[in-house]
Length: 491
Image (tube, rainbow, N blue to C red; front, side, top):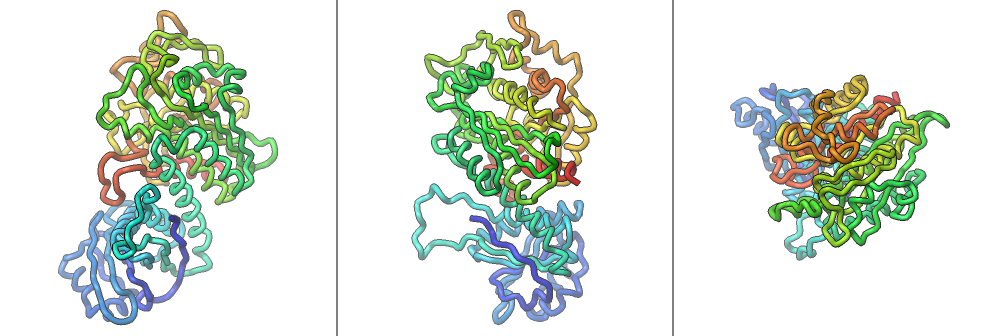
């Protein structure tokens, strides 16, 4: 359920709220603006700071209760010593999760001088932390049911000046909500057709042009690399296209491309049974494109953007592609399939080539493409590669602004030797070494002539462990990177 946000000026001591969140930096001096609140709590807040019971560190929190009028509870959360925007965003995420756990239903949030990017970050953070996925659970008896977090008031110095940052934060938050919900749905519900319906819903809400192509149309377009992955599934594969036209007529768009494998068994090169259920998240790149298009449309950015999604499932069966098969992609290049579990790049190959018809000013794709990126960068950093250094730098900067930090990996010419084939133009896997790089080099063959950047989000789009500020599951990556990149180009 989405959170309804508003902003308010004034003294938070007067807030009639079940929970007031106060975010403070590391080693804080107690703010004078909270003197009335401190008095209401009998000086407990300033004593906690003075005695270092609360030191404002990253992920630190302290919950205090008070009777009478005003806030029923105060939650102190630490913003740490990081960049103020990043620190406040994380503090708000923790606060949202704590509020959801308490079942308070609504909260107020205060931090010193909340304006601009910091305010936007707080809104995004509260939404991230307060988000819960309950729709497939049986109903909890009313007596045991906790209230979902549905409303948040953020205290700001100037309400009128805060409106645009509030709207931007809500736009990004709503985009991330769509992305996380789609990613969390199991593969028997979130099918390629389901993603197509989600795209149509976004199109109807924001008057975007939406096109959906199935197996028959893709056969006519000679997308035999994509279709090879879909050979063993009874579900119709989908190429989904959303067009946002906020720029000048005829102006080259930014293309956002997402891998949409609604479930990946690995095919004949089958995955191990342990944790295979996590492969429902293999459509996180596609979910990120849909969430980003929602946010971009809400922001009404003055730029043209096209979202492109290739969606299917990678299954086993009598018609499944086999190691050793050779297929021809829509750009005419032949591919030897040496591992059927390297399927995402086969889908993206034809989708990237399809993007050429838009003559895009830049292409950014996102995919949970390789386990190798998790080995290289863990679960905190996006792997970033591409064929245009200026655009790579833009994407890296966008990721930093959005709190989805990336790290560039090299695409040296020498690595191409690893994907050479004896029987075709290339093979779809390069061996154990440099797996993330060889996957990107494979994609580069289909992005020729376009400024292109690839985001490998296999380690960051979802987490298999609790993340302190968020539970295990989808994180919303790469929505903010996509949105910040497009915002940067629209300005």
